[in-house]
Length: 376
Figure 1 (tube, rainbow, N blue to C red):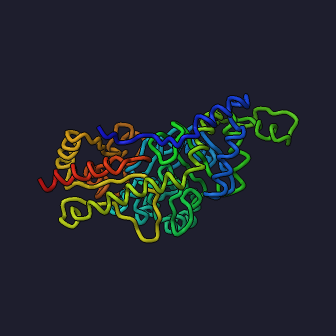
Figure 2: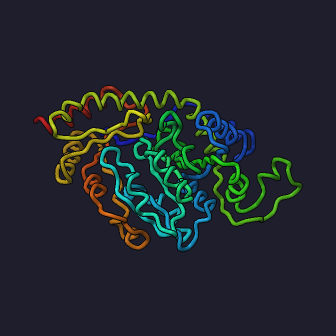
């Protein structure tokens, strides 16, 4: 069976974990955490990067830093993972969901302004499949209405919008290092801030509401409880594992891109026949080969295709169930406008195996199996 995903492993992870243990500093904010943060400063940019235990927690922190509270409204796409919404629901906000664009599966930027009310506090663009949302339009709308922009860049590490990295295009960028992501430490994340005004409070929130970070830098002679917060700091073991992959990020991305390009080229003839659709990458964007998906004609065809691929030893998967159709979505969110594309497109989308180290033989088998379904 060719799995849908195999977490990346580059070889130095165990060596770095052993070093972290030898340093007798494994609780977090040690040498490996510092090196990971420095990588972000150099490669991604922003004012300050803080590693977190997950992208979910990075979103939680962003919600707190935006002072999201009971009665506020936050706009986001319905086609996203539950963490995008949960971060704001936990703060008492009402989630306002809008339809997606069928070409990129991203939030339709032209639907945002109509969804804004006097209760709207933030917009959360989600860069689906590592393909950036239309951030110029989103930022212009946010500036006009004095809203925060929080990028859910869980899938978009090193992806670019008009030459600029995703994650530093708004006020906050939230990244994931879950085992399904291009760069992984099993569970982990990062919060990138683009403004200095949030840095000190973010450190306090991440350190359980204490000014412990300032104490360790020698800026104060003791630390104490100064705000509310939680334990969002990952251990040095996670950071050590992560650093090994960040150091080889270019190689990992290149390997994934080779698989993405292979799929795209090999399946183009089926696209021309009109039996399926392939991902669309606008010319002003650079993606990171986070996923390769196809769109079948409809849900019935997709279901048959999944079964066919499984019989051929290929594990393929569909993706999100739109938030507004879920039980919790009905309770905590409202879909603004008409669901023209979100449900219909989500029912067609099928993700093919894509991971670091996917072999030529496996790629060929996947493509051949898919072609067999359509050509007999």
